[in-house]
Amino acid sequence: MNCRRASQGYKKGSLEEKSAGDRNRCPIFGLDLITDICNKRMSKNKANLAFLKLIEEAQITPSFDEQQAHGISVKRGSLEYLEATVKAGLLPKETACKLWAKSIGHAYYNPLTSIVTEEARQKLSLEATRQYNALGLYFLADVLTVAMAEPDNLETITKLESCAGCKISPVFSLPCEIFDAIKVHHSNIDRLSQSVDTLEKSENLKIAGLSRDNMSDFIQSESLVSIFDTLLFLAIKEKASHIHLEPHKTMTQVRFRCHGRFVNQLKFPMIIHKALITRFGALCGFHPGEKGFSLERGSFTLGLGTGKASFEVSFLPCLHGAKTVITIRLTKTRHSVGSLQEMLIATGNLRQLEQFASSRQGLLIFAGLPGDGISGLFNAMIKEIASTSRSIHSLEDFIEVEWPGMTQSHYNLDPSNAQGAPALLEAILNQDADVIALRGMNDEATAAKAVDASLQGHFVLATLSANGVRNALLKLNQLGLRSDISAAALLGVVSHRLARRICNECQTAYQPSAETLQKYFNDWENQTVNFYRGEGCANCQNSGYDGHVSLFEILTLDDRVRAIMAEKLDFLGSGSEELDLNWQPFLLDGLLKVLLGLTTVEEVERVCR
Ligand SMILES: [Zn+2]
Image (tube, rainbow, N blue to C red; front, top):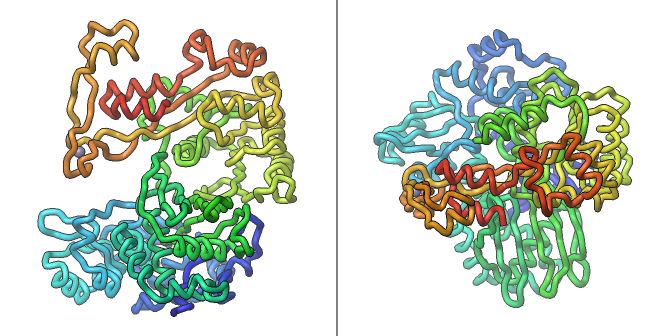
């Protein structure tokens, strides 16, 4: 058993605020987090003078005092210096990495956010990728492009060429990004199943079930930690928003939610379920009682490249044990946030969103459920607003993107806490903010404060956990807001869902039946209209789909709509046709994207259901 290895990288962060010292301690072992791993990976510690000159010219060189404040004591201009200053936020990552790459005559590539093809990954064995901290990215014209921390190291390149059996074209990546990308891209379901099978047959598993002490040893064992880590990295690789561990009588079902769709992964024996959730609990800082876990929520984070992944864990006691759902959120760089203009939004909807972004006051709601991609739309909207010179303050339960020039606060999930969202909103009102971005308006006190702020002349944009625009309006009422008050405050409600996009490589047109046309387009039955679908090819693994397309639902409030809403809150239920251009439901946007060949009518039906 290797306790030091097993504790690496995790940071506890339950829903309570943690002191800085607390955050740096591992919850299971009480050991300080091991930070020397990067140092071991980087043999060379020499200063890159060309890089220092480039950052000086770009006027982004961190001052000595800033370095001291972040405890950065590595050699100035070394690769370790680049990684440490980027991690500390003293150098802008994209710019600094591109300048480093330029200084050594190579391109920069982030293997955690860019394409890594399966073919390229397999060209180098796991042993070789680990030994040289190098990852195959893509294979084109018999040349393998490889992410390396030292792309000018000819000795390593020669060794990698002999391993891969082909020519290698190296690109520069940060050592920590390659190291974590190897874990993510080498996680697969077969490896996970094999590890589970091996563990199931081992003696350790039988002993673990005997007593609580044995279990606490077992959850630190290398075999269990390996399964645990592979599960997390596999979920990150699959871009899952949630992991579900559902206990049944004899086994537990593991499922991922990916882009809003539920995907079965594999089944575990019950004893492994028990061990995995005990480990999840321990990382969040709580332990099962005599009868297992009670209703509990917590979270922990894991460093990933220069950012981090946050895992929010929720336990619900059920007949055969605690059902455990893990919500995964990854920090993003502002450069990886797409703009509104890149989101394939229908022209009318795009104009409306741009108009919302220029608002001076009022409340704009972003309604969606986890996995709907609402967070991506919210970020794109912030990006749009950030391009205007206004004072923006964001309130977030998890800081997903660090925005330059914007004030960001992290709030406590308990609304009655002194650091809860209502108290912080009150404080922001005294700080002369033009725009308030609130991620999560899901309790009465927070909703009341947000409405209050918008009525006082601030522009508030807030996410609300609700399935579509109509439900969002009902939810406002459930949060104790009178319909006339909501109507007075609201600028609009925007909702977003993801539909699978037809694969570009195998897209074909077909003519829908007269009945289908009649169902969606009242008087089109005699028209010749093309719908599209993917026939299935190697690119889309025969699914006919590749990637996603956004569907939007937008309600815009003007005086006429406000008057209708003040009278009757659920006005979208019937007679909504009279709202004309103020109301753009999902179905309308979906059908437009069917006609454009972006998605299928079956996907639109599934998403709009
Ligand atoms: Zn295809």
